[in-house]
Length: 597
Image (cartoon, rainbow, N blue to C red):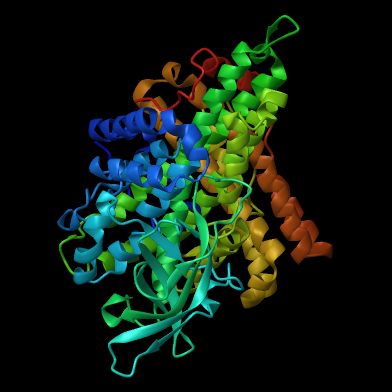
């Protein structure tokens, strides 16, 4: 049986993967499906009945639910067994995140922090003694974790932190002074992973216990959304942090922070998939019961369009998330969790996919915003009323484009990560760009060829890659190492890269399903993939045009646009009919049902 292949981070841009080489939701094992079912049952049985209580801050209830989740292993999926964890594969951990993100913000924010940025720094960079002391209690929910990075004057520029850590005269403690802002779980956290400057310039990570003298928290922030979550400032005033609680190495706090944020971004993307599915179910149920002009509004074309778009975007995001989970699992094979360097080896393996983590975060957060917005629109005035969970979901979704690094920062990181890999020789990007550019003059588009299912879409994905590479190459040639200063151009290139990963992930997943079960059982997946690729490809074309227009002029620009016209020549298809097909398949069940074995 064919097996998934370990691609390098960013390699999807220069290599055409085969369906059997990527992991898809249809590949879930029996055990993984059981884990997902258990997480779903926990959500239905424990979270949903308390939704109203969790919409307003209720720390005791949140802590109780976290401990119940801990008993079932839902807090410890990423922790080694020797420290009380479940040590599950990344696909299983992703399924837990997805299914437990379908509830109230009061729980899913606390759970996300606890299992992500609140504990992963210890998992990846903690010493054996630190792991032994803290991880078992984080795994059960006896201790609640938080991640204190942002400061009043330093958000995206986190490495410029002003919090200080000064070694005591006896060399036993670091004296911590400073303030952290917008810290999730701060109101009831027992443990803070935080950062400070040692000797003024050495950005360093520390483990701080809430009970220590000098640790305090400010009042709860009044937020637009996620009202059930705790968000406060954390104040450190002459806090004596034992040297044993220094996390990682002095001056290497950025390594802890960036690796933690990478996985946090990926986990956030998984949570948006769960949120999207829940909103789809709510929107369709409402549309089936809302009668206007003598029939349910789900029978109207524009409502079907909205339902189909919600489903298609969620399908694409789900395809991306689990494709990435498969890569992470392959990257972690062979690492012995009992070894002292296991965490650092794990961090190194995960760091390879920082680009994919940022892509998933951007796409997922913007997908959920879209789905929440259209859900409100389908419900009309009822969707705008506070008692409706959809109104709350609309406000809650907005934060996803801000935390774990704003989407703007992540767009810059996508291109920066790619260029760094190219400059280091880790990815032959520049060589491939040169090859694509050299073959452009002789390239002739195929015309009038009978195509197998999704063959046209395969070609469009391949052409999108060429277009993206040419646009990136033109920008690099123009600005060289100053490209980072041209943020608008960088963002356009990032958006092209995001679309390429999205289109290819959906295409590979659907083709793999066809190969296993045939076209008849894959009609909705095919329709969703065709719509997405045929709608996204012209966007790639337009973004590339903007890049070329920004970096070139005169004869050079005309030559670039002529080449682009060759690559972007595809006839449109009837996406209206395909969307209706997608919507009509979802409406009877009133739920997202594209994740099938």
